[in-house]
Image (cartoon, rainbow, N blue to C red; front, side, top):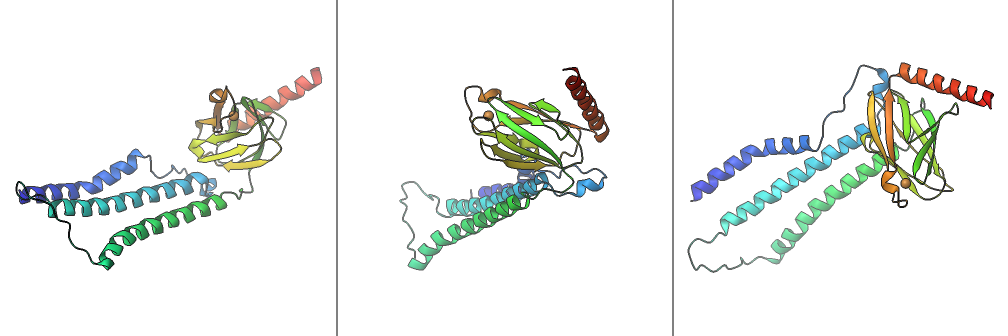
Length: 254
Ligand SMILES: [Cu+2]
C-alpha cells in the first residue's frame, strides 16, 4: 500500500515540470516575435506585461506545488490505518500554531506585494511615450471609435497603423465613459467626456487585431468594437496619402 503511494508520488513529481510548462504554454506565455529591426528594441507594454504574467504564473505554480506536497504528506501521514480508527489531532505548541498560520500568510503576502509593486512599476514606465510616435486622436461616442490622423483623415472603428512605429492615441469622449481596449497590445484606457487621456502601443507585425469598448456605455455597447490594422510602412504611407488626396479633393469640390 505504502509502496504504491510512494510510486504514485514519484510519478506525480516527475510529471510536474511538464505540467508546469504545459500550463505556461496554454496561457500563451511565449517570447514575443522579434524581427531584425532596430525599432523592435523599443520596450513596449506587450513585452513588459508578458514578462509579468510569466512571473505570476511561475509563482502560482511554485507555491501551489509546495502547498500540494505538504497536503499530500499530511494525507499520507495521518491516513486511517485500520477500520474504526478515530482521528486525534496532534498537540501543537503555541509557536508551532503561530508558525503554521503566519509563515504561509507571510509567503503569500510577500509574493503578492512583490508582484503588485512590479505591476505598478510597469504601469508607470509605460505611461511614458516613446518620442518617435504617431499621434492619433480618438473621440469615442455612443457607439463608435472615431479616429483623426495628423493630416485630418478620419476613420471609424478602424485604426490603421504602420508596423514598427509607436502609436499614441490621445482620447476623449463625446458623451459617456468608454474604454479603448486592445488586448493584443496589452493596453486599455478610459475615454471620458471633458477629459483627455492617452495610451500608446507598438505594432510589430502586419495583421489585424481587435479593439473593443471595455466600459459599459449603453444598449449598443456590445456592438462598439473595431479593428486595428497593422500595415507595412510602405502600404501605410500610400494609404495615408491616398486618403489625404481624397480629403483635399472632397474639400475642393464642396
Ligand atoms: Cu463604449
